[in-house]
Length: 268
Image 1 (tube, rainbow, N blue to C red):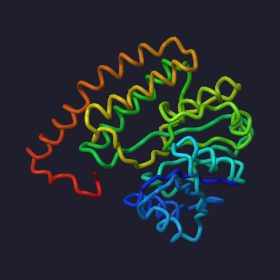
Image 2 (spheres, rainbow, N blue to C red; image 1 turned 45 degrees about the horizontal axis):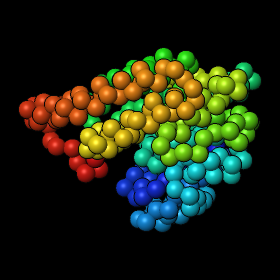
Image 3 (cartoon, rainbow, N blue to C red; image 1 turned 90 degrees about the horizontal axis):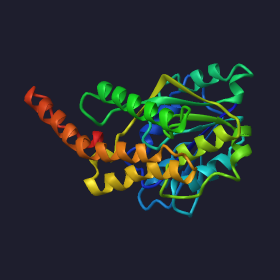
Image 4 (cartoon, one colour; image 1 turned 180 degrees about the vertical axis):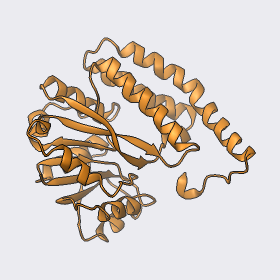
C-alpha cells in the first residue's frame, strides 16, 4: 500500500528538520510526503524546500484542520499518515504501518499509536501516564478509541467518505472530530501502543490561562457532537489545570536535586 505522509506546519523551523530527517531514515520509504504551510513567517518553507522528497503545499486559511484537509485531498496514496511537524519517527514506522495494513480487514480501520515526549523529565513515565489518561478517557467518553494527530493513519477511501462532513473549527480537536465522524460512518478505530512517535509535550509550557483555553477544546468537541459525557470531560480538564503545572515543576526540582542538567533549548 502506498503511504502518503501529511504534515501541517505553522512556524516550525525549530522542529521540522528533525521530523523530515526521521522520514528520510525510514527503512521503507513513503510514497510521498506533504508539508502544508499554514502561513508561516519563519524558515519553515525554506526548510521544507531543502528536502527533495517533500511536496510543499500552501493553505492560507489559518487552522490545523484546514492544513490537514489540504494535505489529505492532495495525497494520492491509499494510506494517509498524519503527523505533526515536531514528530520524530522510529525508522521502522512506515514499515510497521505497511505490515498492519497488509490484510484487507485492516483496510476497513483507522489506526493510531502512542507518544514518547522528549521535552519533559522522566519522559517514559510521563508518556505512559499521558497515554493511560488521554487515550483511556477519550475511549470512555467517546465510547471507542480515538485518533491522535501526531501518530495516525486513515485509508484514503475512509477519508473521502467523511471529508464533506468533518467540522471546520479552530476551537475543537480536529483529530477527535475526525474520529467521531469515522466511527459514525461505521469505521473502527484501532489503537496500538507501538510504534510510538517522539513529540513535544508543548501545552505544559503554556501559562495557566492558555492551557485552560486549550483544555476547553476537549469537552467542546464532544458537546457539539451531542455526546452527553462532555461534562465529565470538562470536569477532568478542570482537575488537570490545577495539578499539571505543579507536577511538572516538581519533576524539574527533583531532577536538579539529583544533579540533572536543565532541559536544553532543543528540548523546550
